[in-house]
Length: 93
Image 1 (cartoon, rainbow, N blue to C red):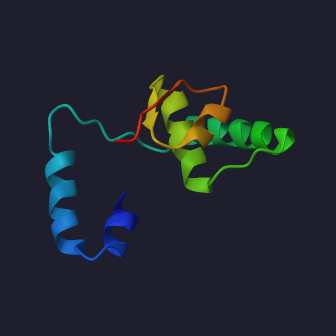
Image 2 (image 1 turned 90 degrees about the horizontal axis):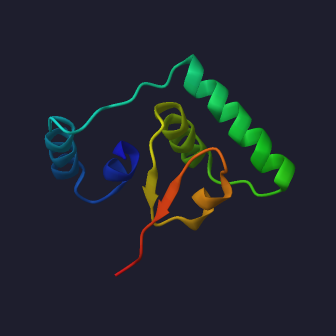
Image 3 (image 1 turned 45 degrees about the horizontal axis):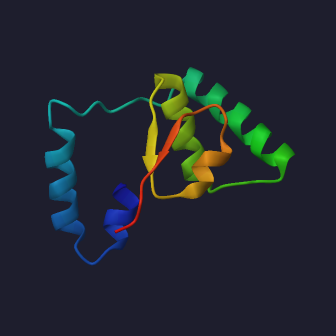
């Protein structure tokens, strides 16, 4: 998220909004640790063997969600290629 914010035309405003979001009591920041890296490797192997690669950062998101038992909420259909994580595909307005 931070990279996208910094690449945009409102870097300081976006950073401020990100900090406000992260400080919410309902937001948990999940660590990338050894367990997440194991999910990452397994997901990447599955995707490569199937010939269906997705962007690297999205693999990290999926691996973190898989480790936490969380659902990925996304507009990106490529997350549905990952059997190890539940994905809720959101509709576009």
